[in-house]
View (cartoon, each protein chain N blue to C red):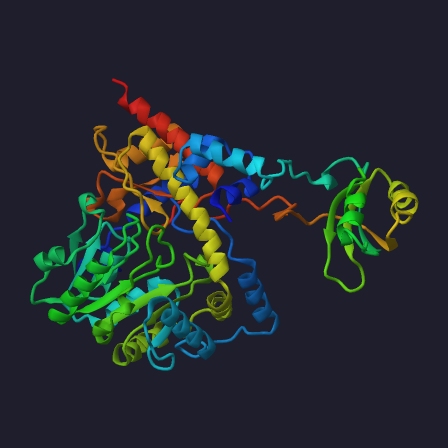
Length: 391
Length: 160
């Protein structure tokens, strides 16, 4: 008798579950915890946006849209990215509305990669990057970013990792989980690097609106890489619209047309209600975004000051809504630290190792949580740390 | 608006230490700034936001539109000041409407109380031409706060 054939393709069965998933299972049954483990805003979607979504339902806008997304939304996106990031894309031929940036990353990678192509990406990073590259047939090549450089990515780091097989780079700044941002020089040099090595840059700028000390520098503002840039953005973070599942990809016509092919076969079209809501948010949401950002900034200040008080080294995060303090020096791995913090103090935070091996020794603490909970979580964390320090 | 005022308008009980942490400042600097605001009249007081609907019903609230004759000297201000002096009057605004000039928020123990105040005190004032009283039935939102308690946080407790 022949041995049974595997039910699952080895490429998929070899994929590890996300490190976050393990933690999620532990936390799921507990009601008493304060979670700093949430990667989405605590704010409800601005009322005007929800109202626009309800109105679209009342009007019966419950059908498929064109594959690329509703023309009016694509025009709103083109206007927004021009206004905010000085990027120019044709809404008819160069923009695809996707099911969150997650889908956009997937179809971008599947569009540009051939088997064996290497993709450079930075670590620590969002959990889906390496698996996404593998599923698209590519070879993920992690480039470590370090706390000494404020977790910025520089051209020099990329130069050390590039080979003749490198086809693309995948970036996320402002960065989940480190809160790092790139400055003008970093962006200009990486843009040069991409051009000189004939690469494609996939830039996930989902946190672009959430920078606190200086304006976000977008790769979209570099026309010299326009022919090789896939710019990804969406509504989830700055507009607090995670559940609407709306992202978008702006790319040169040839890439966009081919991305739209995959999108058309796999997805058909992004949710219609979400598209209507997104259009309203892009056109009328600036004020609401500014308000939420001001609130994140207060929490950011509070969290940074709290870490300083308890003596946990933490660079003040420059973007997104995560602090990434260093928890080395207690004789615990970041996973052990996070487990004990959960067990002993009922505070959930994500071990840095979930975002790549070089995240080891750090802890991702989301401040997308209301001030009273943050305050209590910081008090518990301080108590926990001082207990660990006692001989 | 100043960051400190924005936070205090949301929660006036935020401690000096927390205010300092939230604004990347020191408790001393925050205390000094607040003292300045109090001294120059920017901050006029600190009150609890009470949902009266949750308490035993011993109070009625009304909005009253008032037409007044501005005075030759003092314009609307002196009439408004006279009205604002009454204990029953909680707020007074000068409006841009063509049909009335002032809006008052008035409270009393009973409907008769408020009606009596309007009849005896308000409409007999020199300069008051007419009034229209509207009684409030239910509070949905007060000073930016929705009175119904917010739903529990339904987000996944851990997400990427």
